[in-house]
Length: 103
Image (cartoon, one colour):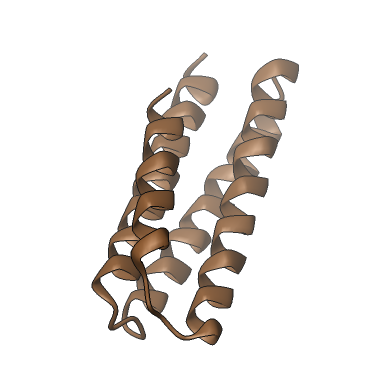
């Protein structure tokens, strides 16, 4: 539910952005990676695959680094806010992963 709330906030921010297409494409690529990470996390949750959980935790770190690097190129405040909300989503995925590898 918290992830869905962040995605709604993100869509509101993106609706207001006036960023160039290149920056929006870069954001969409990060979003697609985040979506894939979420789907794999849910798969690990349902299958109780502990080794997949550890691999996903490593992927999450790499994705966070990519979003941090992308923030340097963004000058539009609305796109920057959307990127911050995407990072929050990645952190929420980390919380799911922690639950999985603690059990």
